[in-house]
Image 1 (cartoon, one colour):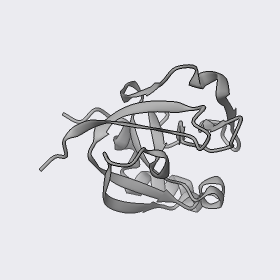
Image 2 (tube, rainbow, N blue to C red):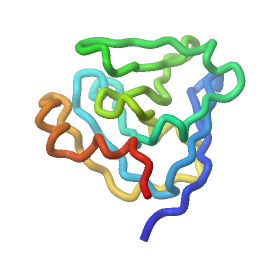
Image 3 (tube, one colour):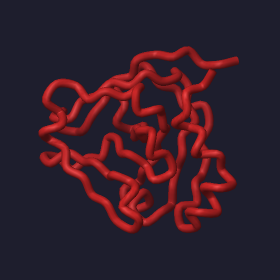
Length: 137
């Protein structure tokens, strides 16, 4: 049985960055142990980029950090420093939404999967994470 698609809203701590995302009401969350995700306690779900929309003037409060291959774009609020979403290396055509930054009331975690970011290539090939940013039919 597929979860109903709902509009989730969320953003950063100071509310300078706000967004909405059309995603299932019940999601699979990816918990990654790569160097940056581990340090910031990141757990997220990924959606196709066209399902995610920044609201208002949020873009002016964002800055981006990259490292390694520079494929992932780690966005964060210039004011409070929170990464409420980012563009992951595993899904450059998608957006990874930080679950703790989704406003309460619309999201239920269906399952938590581990992504071994310390062994990125192997985990990418074995996990199926690349399919998360594809439109489900």
